Length: 598
Ligand SMILES: Cc1cc2nc3c(=O)[nH]c(=O)nc-3n(C[C@H](O)[C@H](O)[C@H](O)COP(=O)(O)OP(=O)(O)OC[C@H]3O[C@@H](n4cnc5c(N)ncnc54)[C@H](O)[C@@H]3O)c2cc1C
Image 1 (tube, rainbow, N blue to C red):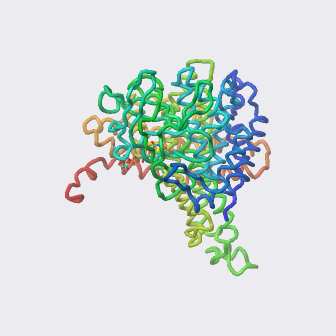
Image 2 (image 1 turned 180 degrees about the vertical axis):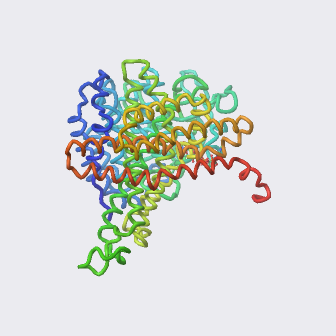
Image 3 (image 1 turned 135 degrees about the horizontal axis):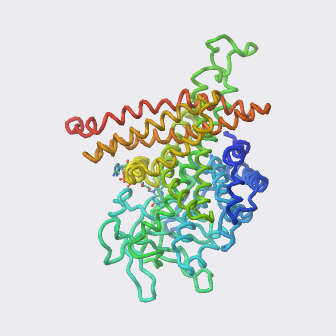
């Protein structure tokens, strides 16, 4: 059976030594008291919850899955899920980063992000029930009326009610403009919603007393396409004026999907049969309101893969130290044993270090983005809020796609470390790989993320936001450009930064002549950008490690960090050269293929 140890030491390193988050928070009155000790103490307890309460349910939940009673439309989650959720609510975990106005604890979002990394390592399927609630909370907090906020947010903060996002229909996933679900206005200001949604995560379950569905639908006079979509709150149980629960709303689970992974999460077909709903935000501006939830969810999905990368790595590392097979090419290492542990073999090390580098680089990226989110919401200086928001918007598709692609690479590499045993259920490794697979698909496939990055966020504003990230790189070069010890980390990032400018202009020029050129380059482009970003964070982590070592710190943590940084720059980062080459090969080898694809 797999094991899990919360990576608290590395979280503390990233938060306090690399990004000095408490210093950032001193400038934000709301977080003035969020010092390192408070954050560390909360995360220590949070790690215990993940490791001791939800992790033990992960493998069993995968086997058991969820069950639908077709007569009542009620869904039963795997054994122990409901009880774990009761403990989660009782301990106040849902409220960690929610607004004190609604009963939240008001801790920085970065604390919640680290908590959820651990929860995703422990049990992604379980974690999606409260995880989606945070996205729905964010959409309502931003676009809900004061009345809607008062009715729903305290219950979502306490965890008594959970949330969902209902976008997808059988004929429309990526292209939501094709949506058919209808919303008919009623005399009392409510709407009657009718339609069929599919693939709704946590769409029906027995863990909370009510489910708040956020549903996209069309008004009768809505313009066609994406500009004619509005957002509605559709609770499973209607809420009475005094806040108590009333009758059942006709929003029923019509079926559960049988799927590759995350079996413990109910992926529901949701039938809205004249269900009562209330509009959130403006008519036909539903996508704007839903984007708050989608952006939160995109960061959340990256965090899911970060969690799975970490737990897969931990288990593969332990196995590689125990499993004896063959002798080391450079001579026996464990002479007292019949064979050496497989960790002596270069390629096993490569697989382990790949997962480790992606986990630690991914953690730096996610923590950095969570601090940006905190600043974009709550920093007193409007310019800081705006800059943080713009940078976050650039990095969001990278978090979503690069981290989940890396999760795919890492969980599969870690499975491979186990050889045939990795393919066998009881070791848990195949579950990590299966569970991760959906992360590359939902919340906008990774291709759609790449198009968003290159088309909208880079070319759409002539690279202005990309230049903002470039400024961070330039600052690092300025700080460390003459430090010989840092050259191996800073030079590749600086060089790639320069190449990116030319590469982007080139694709932009070609795309201007033929838009398919953008589609053909986008996925490769995002991966190059992902390495630029990871490279920058690895250089910053190496910078801290080198300083500590120079100051006489003998903690092996810092030397390990440098070794991983060296591995990353030597073995993973150079992928960028190949990716730029394939991107430059352009659209023709793809589009001039009608005969090949006939
Ligand atoms: C387990 C699971 C949970 C989910 N949870 C939710 C949920 O909670 N709420 C919800 O609303 N939805 C949910 N989804 C739906 C998910 O978001 C969609 O499946 C996803 O957005 C893709 O849509 P689709 O499946 O219709 O694929 P399609 O849109 O049909 O896409 C098929 C392929 O075509 C590609 N493609 C499409 N358009 C383009 C383009 N313009 N350029 C390049 N390539 C393109 C896609 O990248 C993809 O590879 C979930 C799905 C699953 C499987």
